[in-house]
Amino acid sequence: MAAHFGSRLRKGAASTAVAAVAVAALSASQAPGAVGANVNPPATALDTPAPDAASDATGSSPYYTDLPPLHSPAPSSSPVIGTPVSRGEGEAAGEIPATVLDAYKRAESELRDSKPGCNLPWQLLAAIGKVESGQARGGRVDADGTTIGRILGPQLDGNGFALIKDTDHGAYDGNASYDQAIGPMQFIPSTWAWAGRDGNSDGKADPNNVYDAALAAGHYLCRGDRDLSRDADLRSAILSYNNSTDYLNLVLNWVSYYRKGVHTVPDGTGGLPTHRSDETPAHPTHSGTTGPYAPAKPTKPAKPTKPAKPTPPSKPDPGIPAGGDGSHTPKPPTPPWDRPTATDSVDHLAYTDPAAAESTAMAGHTFTGRVAARAETKDGKAVPKVRIRFTITGDTDATFAGGETVAAVTTDAKGVATAPALQAGEKTGAFKITTALVGRQVKGVDYKASVTPRAADALAPADDKAHTCVPGGEFTDAVQVKATYKGAVADRVEATATLIKADDDPAENDKGPYFKGADDKPVRTLTGLKTDDKGLLTLPKLYADDISGTYLLRITTTGGATLTVKLTVAPADGTPADGTPAADDPAEPSPSPSATS
Image (cartoon, rainbow, N blue to C red; front, side, top):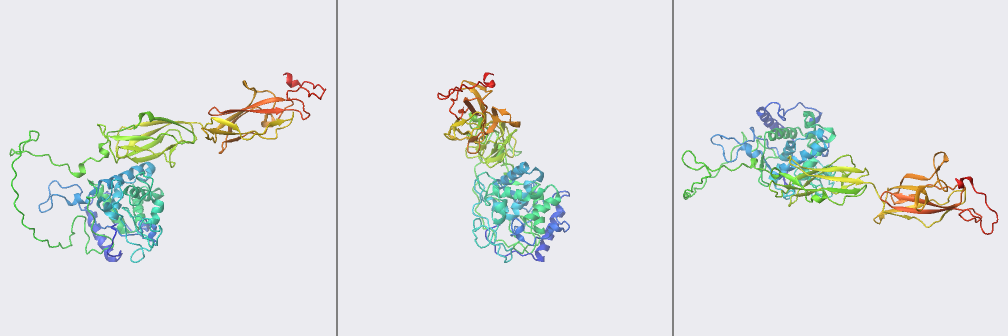
């Protein structure tokens, strides 16, 4: 709605009766079976306004009440005498500014992917946008879709409107006392706080941006597993936006009208509706007309104009065929609704850097390269301001930053759209990122990516303790090591620990220290070990058999990091670790049977 309102919303019997007359007139002109043709459904629980106006998206703020014309939006090829021929009633009413229409269609496309069961038609968003803000005040938006100046409803102070005290500290509406509906889709701040969406992938949800607002409205309407192809769900969704039967009927009529066709016009050139629900019109009017009961205002007589100087005849153009009178007939200009959009001009998508078409990252890490695509015309020229969708496909848990597997990004001035950073998950293997133009099928480009296991390139003792034990005993201190990768902590890296025969013989030893397995049986190789979040690996307790000596424990990780830890098994009486008697001990120990095996 416009930023200023002259009077307060009135919900009296007069305005309800007026709307009923207009709706009945329009429904009589519509073909059976069209959505919105039955504009006066029987009263149901859905038609009863909620006691709390804040329960709907707009806080029951005022809206434009102009009805669509009684005929198709397509301009007539043979106008009736006495009617304007330059811009028909249907043509003007069916105008939607290019960026605003693109926002509606992009929201429909995204909801088709994220909530396919909802079946949201873009015409529903266009209908709500029409009655809420006159299509963002005739498309007064900048190149990114943000309105030029804020669109604000009246403050909801309970004086003729709902009472909704400030919920956003004035952050969105500039009012620290009461809430006001904001933006082209007229969300109240308390609703936007949870319903807001980032529809143009700029990292923020702005109710004043038509892409953000349209996507938020789409998600709002699709709540609760609604299927908007079903009449009951469609009506329920519209009433959830503004709980008024008059509002429901009005939106349904615009949905039906827009489904017959629309005209795309440049931003800022769309017309504005003239009647609002906070006014009391004498009689209903249809968009673009004065209404059957509204007296026409007297017009001032036009000042006589000077006769134009005759222009010399132009030279015949051999490329233009002559008319029947010998004159040349110029080709008529292309009407605005037939002019191609930026999306229509895209012929294909291209790599921005073919060398980056394949990339690899370790599990849990961010891919260093960025996935990007360039929208190009047939002759290779860049196409800005179109949407490219990036989709992760394959058996992977990799995601874009934020946890999504699909991202839609608008191309910049160079025609390039860059996807959010790609984050590897824990599942290893290859997958693809496909690209597609939103709104039209063209040849895209695919990126190949793969995730490798977490790795460490260095291992070091976590402490300086010596690991010693008496024969048949257990080691007091557990072996603990720290893993790093390129100097950073290497967390959740798989490791293997093996008691080996010798430094140059990594085969598993058959004697000496061991770990305990099932039934306390000796185990000299452990697999499936993992470092913790700090890169630390703490091994289970080690035990010694009866053989004294010096033994080696080798730890290896994915990525090739290796560390060998020395273990000493020696009697407490000072017998050397190699099993020979000490100098002050004349006793010669008997060899153990296992020592000669």
